[in-house]
Length: 424
Image (cartoon, rainbow, N blue to C red; front, side, top):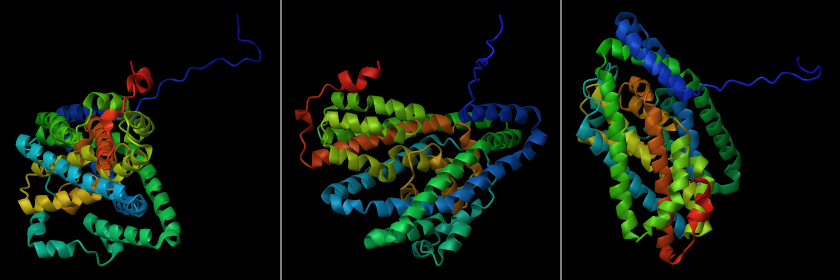
């Protein structure tokens, strides 16, 4: 039997290999190449350098645009009155704790010791802690274009904060500028998406060069880094978020039922925004007023990324350890301040934290090559930090609701029967 004359054969398309799979393949290939051909492998560093230069080109426009949109968009906080103020206060306290949990964890396990990344400009780190007055002076830009050209992230942040505040203050007249910044941020996230297609080559080059230079011991360090992050996130959820839940007397069982499905969506997609619709629905059923959850969750995606901020503090010190750089306590505090500011406005999309990490490393003279080394295992870490971002924002909505006098224990809604029906 042949095909009917007017019918075309059905061709089944082959499933596409995901970028994550390509990165893992490149990681393994780079390790094998570095073991078998250590000499030529060292020359593969060029691929990693090209990838990192592309990543660095994203930092300035993305940081400026996302921060301006985030700060100006927070102009709605004025209309929300005390709800907005309470939410922002809570966000800052919890994200600061997350930074220090990550800082403590990386100092406890020291996963970067022994990698020996090339120092590059790392020696300039010591200049950062010359004096507090000089540090403060250095944070103020003389020109935003000069700050962008030199990759001075903290100066870009200061300018963007003032610029965004000014946009929020003049209202509708600033609308064209906000539209431009919104478009620029979307373009830069799409640009980053395209850059990530080169990531497998960058990972291959970085891993081949690192293994060719250091041997297989670097894999132990990466495994230690992943375990450190998971341990730190578990500690943060149990101790920090758990303490918050106890303080507000949260009905824990019902809350877990409400956030379980959004948590798994965020974990599996590495995108907290993908879980937003279900999270809003379930929190409303949980008993949080819609106007509170609808404000706190989207605002939290800019101001309350607990998992991402913890990861950034941990990863930045990991790179310093890998480069053999001893950071003074004051320099580490300044780095935490930089991360706390630059992490605001990061959209809940995969790999956004890598751009912020690269910018912070460059600002403190640490080798940006560390980003390419981390990228090989970043997917495993991204899943954890994104789901904790989502969990932290759901708890923040509950905290603000409680602060507003909502009795969460009085609400009895059978969430598993409705929202959880598709999960089991």
